Length: 598
Image 1 (cartoon, rainbow, N blue to C red):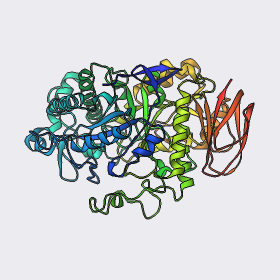
Image 2: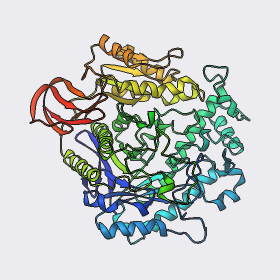
Image 3: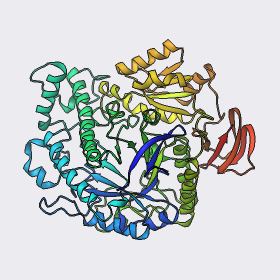
């Protein structure tokens, strides 16, 4: 098997495979019968995430959707790897030097659910699924995972396996099904034990789901409900870490392991499950973390498709951010068209107006969407996998040419050393523990994405970090913004540190729970923060690049804080120049990207 690890190169976490720095750009699809494998191979891509699941049971509790035709452990006596291995062999025939990352859905098959009535959760659709903190799930899931990993280690394709991704829960993203923390009978004993261990209290009782509703109160007043919120998030992180350790041990700690986790800016409910990143960020068992580009406003043009995770904290801890770029295109069909007759009409519709499931209407706008996403990710030094969800989304020469050029840009970037030429002056803080204070449906939750969207339209780029990291990172910034209006103790401490260090900060409050573009810009002006543009376009800065996404087409000017050497990458054309102001024409919805050096 290939050896892999994450090491810092030129100031950024970098994937190494067999001791060689490797461009962490990849491709995957849920529907491999509609794949674009050959197009990506021809474009220089070598990393492929390959989906495999313990079960065919649904990954989405709302739609009851499953992409899998075969679950490995549906028959406990006869594991079936056929679906998974058919496509791996196909890739390796076309590309013998491909690097395979099994993406494993750790979710229990129906026979296990039926035989473990004390370890399951009843979803809102009336189906029983494993409780994510069940010790039986952890133990039996680990045994199945060991069996799967050992099978792969002994396979004829093991020599091309280079890393692993763990998935589980709702939509395979370590989210509790129905977003309710598996609050049910299976939680009673685990919660009772946890309360005893942490608070010394006997016979703890479960809160009710109604305790989390935004009705007649502003914030969470029940101490027991707060504690259950903390419990369910910590226990989800513990389950993930247990499974990650299984793979680490099975591979002698010689291969990278990653997972979806830490969507602190993608607010939903206190019982989401993703709000214990602070306990995982230094785990030796997890090397990379993933999330999609944020789906806010159905991914409209003219705004930032921001990060769900505090990516700059993850980099600070030496973790690679491997971002899922599931960018819809004009070729994006409905799931019903992609697999006729397999799925009901009511799920994942792409018609009837604006929808996150609908792509832009033309190839040119589809290319603009790819560029928009890419500019954000390269300035953050994040890795990318293009998620061709239903297949065929990128089956166009114009789009593949663009994706090929993006791979070349990343290839060249591995050897650059320009990461600190320009960097953001502002830090945007994630306060995951504050969710325990919030109620489902409250404006204090919904406003986090509103403020994040506003941050992207100020003409000032920003980094995103965890409040728990304030002490180690604040000296790198001139100002801070706190979007969590009901802060945790860690959030309050980060504000106190700002005051102690003389760093100005802007915070939402319980009464003023969202910030507008104008409010943030006024705060920046008052504290002499550098504006890269006067318009309310999106500016990306970092990793030796600067980019601008245009809300309105016209002449654009990017004002640099110092004179730099600037070379166009895409979106604008002019000879390399040394300047402190980049001037260029840009159409509406377009993105321009430039490399910058001293």
